[in-house]
Length: 146
Ligand SMILES: [Zn+2]
Image (cartoon, rainbow, N blue to C red; front, top):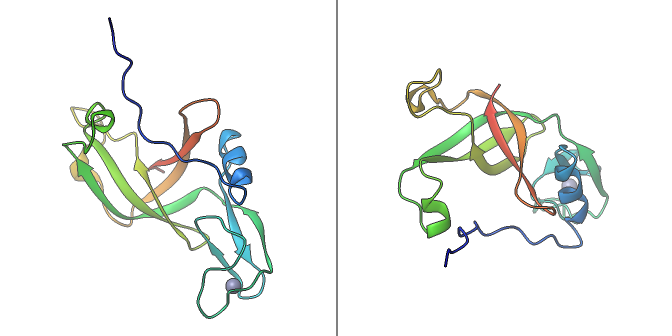
């Protein structure tokens, strides 16, 4: 008897984020934007999260998908079996052009003899979003060197 490969834990869309996940499936990254304080934010929720604002005057905007690598870690030992199957991989925080920070994965980095080696990953490097279809409901936004 063979066992199915373990799957990484996936997000469970909520009413406030259904639109976000629908757009990810279409290959688009969307953010919430607060018209009261003129700031965008992530993760998606209806009420502006900045303590000096908390406005409900918010709406969806499409992000450019471009940003810079704020920080990253190369994972060589996964925390659970599902992640162990994926090592080595890079977890990252990307600062989007629109301002918000988004936790994500940095992909397209060669760990062998390829063009981009992990020692060429630099904080501040330009990155752009790509989407990995995980199943029929979830496509995860990840980033690669731009
Ligand atoms: Zn606000």
